[in-house]
Structure formats: structure tokens, C-alpha cells
Image (cartoon, rainbow, N blue to C red; front, side, top):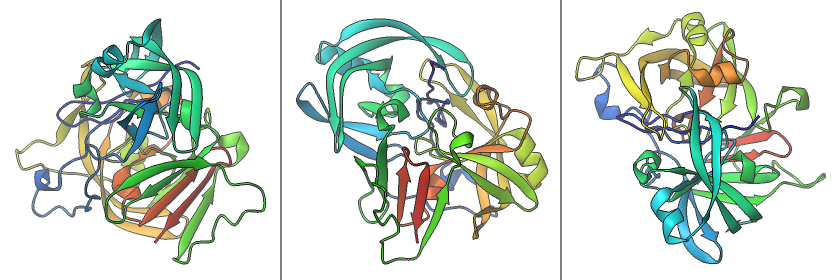
Length: 311
């Protein structure tokens, strides 16, 4: 499927396959609502990595494991004189949209080296000020290491080879693997649970806050969050400016293969993204950096469908 998504707005939440979306600030939650501390020095809530384009850079690109296309800021594309590559349809969190694209002869970041890369164009505001976004179209076949200790940083390396020790870290780890027949266009998906409600969760490093569909929120008994301004929703938008309301809710708990988290805030709604993935009628979520950042390191191997969380 050709498509991707994006996010921006009062609360940028990623649109589905290639975009940004901002977290619920802890200060925005009612004082009696439990909050999750988020990693410091993230790019608008997401981790970034240095990217070189045609030998120039480094540029500051956010990494988005659930975006099926990569994005570049319009002003940067113009300064690099990237050639127009025509319009493309993209599926954002909210809807199917059409955006213009450009071609970059060479792109490099860590172990990632790619030629003739097609980038979707987006206003810098829609990227939370980042130079662009690296999606799963470029991350495919690589391993993404997210380090939340000290200065948060994302590194792109080679997928581990057969026989390599993927769990060689000295700290306690939790390991997940997505069966081959359950991978959605190369995206990493794991099973999660809240109370007795089970759901499929896409690992989404472009999501600054976890998003759940209505089916999961209802089954988990999620409760509404009243924000300091008295509202119980936030606007979520794609880079084009199209936006909708998302309900602010609190999941009573969230379990990931033996790891239990209590009182997890999220945004809920029946978004276009879940329809595209065929998950509209079953509990589903986009697991964001707000949850991944509770661990010291998250290692995502998109080629092997593996996730390791280091405590």
C-alpha cells in the first residue's frame, strides 16, 4: 500500500504512516490524574537522528518506526534543490490525503545508506520544527536503538545476524517478537493487555503519546481525563492541517509480556489509521514514546520483527 501519515497541531499526534503528534503535557493533566514522566531532550517528544542528504548535513530527522514513508521539511527540500517527484496518496491518522514529493539522490544515517529516496513534503511546523522524518520505508531491514539515558538519541544500525546475541545487555531485558504472518507492511506489532482486554499494539516511535481505538478504550474500562482547561479532548492533526478531536483517557493499566504499567494516559478515537490496518473492529493501539521512554533503552529490529526493552 502506498501511504504514510503525519501529525501536528495543538497536540500533534502522528497521523498513521509518516508523521508527528505531540504528547499530552504533564502540566495539562488534572492534578489528581497520574502522569508518566517523559524523556528529556526529545524532538517534540520524539527521538531524532542525524541525517546526511547528498553529502550535506547533518540534518535533524525524527525517527518513526510506524511511518511507511519518510518526510522532509519543505524549506529544507528547497534549499537542497531536490527535484519534484509528483503527488502521492498518503493515509494519515485522520484520512487519505494527497501530498507532493521530492527525490533525494543519496541519504545516509548511521548504517542506513539509500539512493533515489522519495520524500513527502510537509511544512516545518507540521514536523514540530524537525528537518524531516525517517519512516519504515528507509528503516526496513535495519535495527533502531533508542537510548533514553541522558541525552535521548536514536541510532540506526544493521539488523542482527543469525547467532548474534540480541540479549547481551547486562541490564534486565524484556523481549518481544512479531510472528511473520502478523507483520503489517514491515511494522512491529506486539500483544498488550489492559485489565482483561487484549489488543494489538504497533510500536510507534513517532508517537509522542500512546493512541488507542475506541474498542480498546471501552474494553479496558478507560476513564476520561479532565485537562486543566476543563476539556476532555485534544485536537490531533496531519501536516496538511486537517484535524479532529481525540478523547483524553486513562488506561487503568497496561501489560506487555509480564511488564505491568499502572495508570497510562492515552488519546482515544476511531481513527482512519486503524481502518487502514484492518484493526478498526478489534482493540488496537499505537504504542508511543511515552511508554517506550519508561525504559532505559528500546531496540527495534524491523527486519526480524524483534523488540527488546532494557530496564
